[in-house]
Image 1: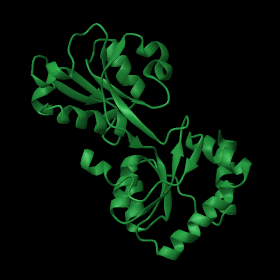
Image 2: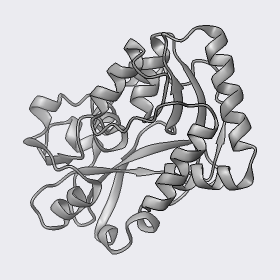
Image 3: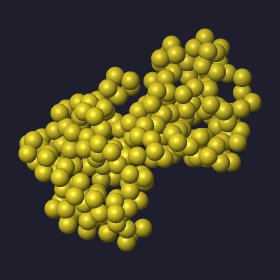
Amino acid sequence: MWEVARELADLLHASRFTTIVPFTKYDALQQALLDGTIDAAWGPPLICARVEAAGGTVALRGVRGGQVTYRSALLARGADQFDITTLSAGAFRPRAVWVDSWSMAGYLLPRARLRAAGIDLAAGLLTERTLGSYAACLEAVNAYEADLCASFVGPRTIDQIWGGKAARLKVIALTDEIPNDGIVFSPVLARDRVVELLAQLHGVLASHQAHAVFAQQLHVDGFERPPRDTYAPLLAMI
């Protein structure tokens, strides 16, 4: 994996991206894009939405399984009787577990879906916890330590994604679709610099080998140019 990461960095340098900066926290990455500390980044949909809303450009978005969008599925144990209707009626208050506050499919989208169903989260959920990963959330529900969690879904079904971890779970609701992760340019960039960076990206991705390295590192099958203002509307959803 380190060798592939090194190859990706070499390709970026060859494409005249002079400095490659790793970020471990999404809030720091978002701020660096917004203030122009960095020119471009591979970011999750939430960061793409906020940067686009501030005037930035989402240059490319990932394609997975032929799809450029995904959604979230709210999950409960198959034997449990509650659903969105009973939750909105206040008949049962589940214990919810989420991934983290930056996760679209594991936190923001499912909570927005509950609110859209008329559920007051403070009153309708008994507890809310973040566990740091999808797997941990599914395991908590399977172990009766929680009653409700969420997972991303796209080209693959819940069973295909999680295998045995999902065997005892059922989908009680799906959210609207949102665009996949993308390469986003800072709103501080001048227009001619945006054009230059786009040309550099398309140039490097024209190579089959370079395309394969980028796709492997970013966990996608390929890339496409999204229409303008594809991401900013996400902010109204959440």
